Length: 313
Image (cartoon, rainbow, N blue to C red; front, side):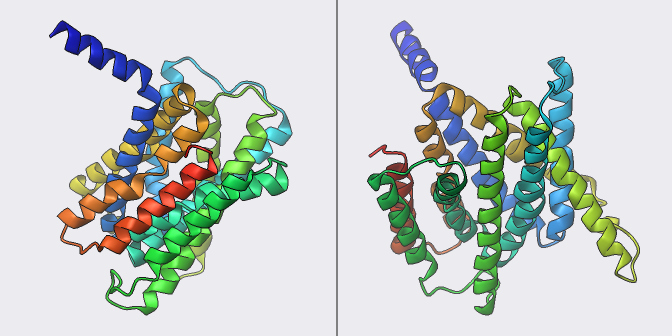
């Protein structure tokens, strides 16, 4: 028994970064299913604002408990983080929820794998971070795996095939927004000593502010002057689901990603964080969705491509 305890402790201690990354991917897979269900009742803009506001409260409370304040940072870095939040959270996450509504969580998360190679390409262009031949092959393999699954002739989630292209378009908007936000954040973090939790709080604050302004402008352009249709969310059960899911995906997800990047090599952490589509497959099957062997193989091929991008295989 003592040997087993020591073995388990050794495993957790030496692979806590990898376990944190897998946990983050699992939480986001489960969360994506919940968000897609909530999207049937709450529009993407409102859902993103509610989710982000809840996560922001948790982040601010954490900073307060840690007695942490935003350290002095150069204006350029602040501007980059704010822009990163506007694009990567305000726009990208709203597009993501729209894609959930049209494609469902399984196909949307599969397309989101493209964020990893997109970040690499943008970093190559704007940060002069060079890619190896193996990395280029990984990008091609990732795109092939995703295209193979998406091109499969199966009924869309909504039952109307014309929604498929629109859903893919929104998922791509979200992917490009996420990747742009990540590159902007990386550029900012290299110029300052701000910690990831503080930078995340700043990014999320910027994203929520632009969403609120967006909602206000939209309300003025309609006959209904209300910023929100509160009747759609005035339910204790619904608010509890949103709070728990926001805590698990946005707050815990960020925390687990930080742990993975701290205790595991960056390439391994990024690859394992991208495994959400693998976790969502059994969830989709459990919920009665038909998942073909081609879909499973395509996800595996795409993830092998991500691993190649980081020279892990």
